Length: 308
View 1 (tube, helix red, strand yellow):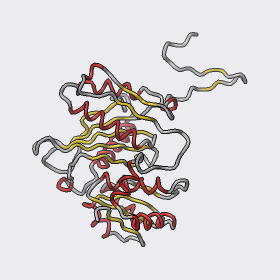
View 2 (cartoon, rainbow, N blue to C red):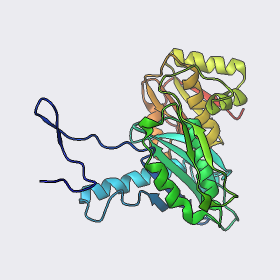
View 3 (cartoon, rainbow, N blue to C red):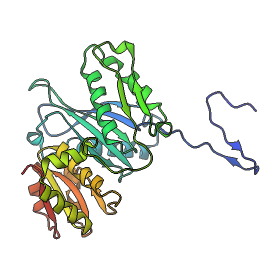
View 4 (cartoon, rainbow, N blue to C red):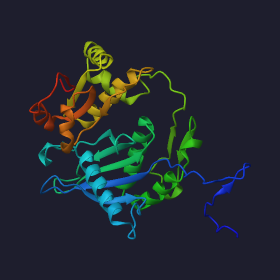
């Protein structure tokens, strides 16, 4: 019987056994746009998601419940503040772990256009830790989103990016351009990292650059030594970009060593209990939540305020 066009079917290998084709890889798993209304509680709302049918109408109840729980968790990580008054809403990029560290959440927050406008957060979920590429990509997508001339092209651009196979991109140039976007939107061009790890350079690694700009050499060495001695480390700031940049920056500086313990670059209010864990960790906490953390029964720890 012939297979339907476009449908993957098991194939027979030389040994006579059937194998199921591996699922296709995507550049990113899901794109989210959350909005935070200017009045009321800190309760972000999902405004847009791509792909749209993450959980379809025929999904089982437990799948819908899991999806709703993940959305709630994700929205709080996109706005990890104590309350709405804590949100500075300066435009900033930051990164967190999602789904137990299986994926990265690359975010870009938009400050409201007016005091009566919504705050926004664009978020890309992916399993690839390409910080420079995804930060630049979010800025490019944000330009399309906030332009009245091209905002309707955002789903089309996301579809083209989503269809790309990252396994074919290692060490290559990623380029996206479309004449329909208009001359005010420049093509997106960026290099995809190589599969082979390499020593990091300050001028090409945004996380190490943030770390070096926010901490003195002495404090960087103290923080580095704390990681080598497997300490519990809390990093706090008023800026989410400085928090996640400092967390990932110290991890990058450890190469070729790796951090084998708990790593939570950005913590939401619901995760604060994790700070009482008895094992080594590196955790990033917004300054609006640090007082609540310090009221917890913490073990011996190192507190780094990158604002001071």
